Image (spheres, rainbow, N blue to C red):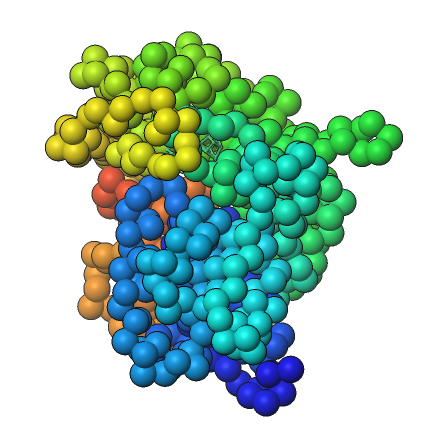
Length: 483
Ligand code: 5AD
Ligand code: SF4
């Protein structure tokens, strides 16, 4: 094998998109390290350059194609360098990637990632590009298509995680909702829930290796349902209960939820299990019934309102966040205003707002006209964001003078208010972490605080961040009662 010839190959990897992609990249890197690769942050130093890609919006794809364009010269100078396009764009564009970027050596879809080492080797040996993709959704029986999206959760390499005490654990793959605007069901394949025993075992191993916070991942994580051969069904609420028993696991989070599947048993589990994060990300996408119907979201605004009421009643200390698409096909000013109203009355902790981006291969692209002009999309995006930001500011202000419990993640990446502080092994520096409701907190601390839960007294806020200092006073657990 080539790893014997060249024991230290340098790997550069760039990841865009969602948490699923971050996890996939972690696993690919862990696997390649077994083959003697080591990571580099300099593209010029690399022997292998990988892009783990996203297809959810055009912008994400454009970024990758221009990055590929930028390394064309490098490949011409050093043809021995391997270039790979992995993930959703690889599955969506397949051979088109090679037409647009002929210097690419491997194209590997998200359901074929275990084949990355083999594909790299084949491309070198055969001297021609290699393609490994899964079946299209209508290219075979459900079983055949599902089998082509192989489960990819090999043994975890603790050194490969961005932080040693936080980890993602995939509980579901794929999606079967087929929202009309969304490319995910075609590029990530059919919905599959992983067996609970496997998830618990993987989590236990991670905790043994020092992890204190696990984030469960699924495109619609609360649709999780696993039927044992004896007919017993495990739901997300059951899974949370089982994970809660792992000694040493201090916090469990889960993203992303689908409104229809926000069942009472799940809300009760969140209420009753103290180590489950009080944070629910449940995308609404629109506040207009006509748009929701066109999006094929399978719920009405009334159902979403009812879900919000059930959340507030059952878990009053939970923070809820949402996603919105503005400028979807046929969205009138009145439709858009309904989204504004929904944000106003739901008082989300935050909302991720996106301009509709038509995706080839989706129902919406086939059935509807992308008829909202770009300037209107932009204006609606800014308007909705301004409404959300005002809510964030009002809610955050209520934290001033209060103390919250924070899991410290590491040095703060965002702009700081006291940037003159210098970092040293033992010196004070700007650290960032998250509360039980997913609020970002920045404070001055020491490196030894990283990975620990600490009480922080808040003395200043912005729309996205709470700023504070280490406190000795009692921790306020009931964040939402403040907000
Ligand atoms: N255009 C814009 N936003 C989209 N999303 C998904 N597909 C599209 C699209 N075609 C958004 C949804 C989803 C989030 C991950 O991305 O809001 O919740
Ligand atoms: Fe896409 Fe809808 Fe599935 Fe979310 S639920 S991944 S928006 S199809």
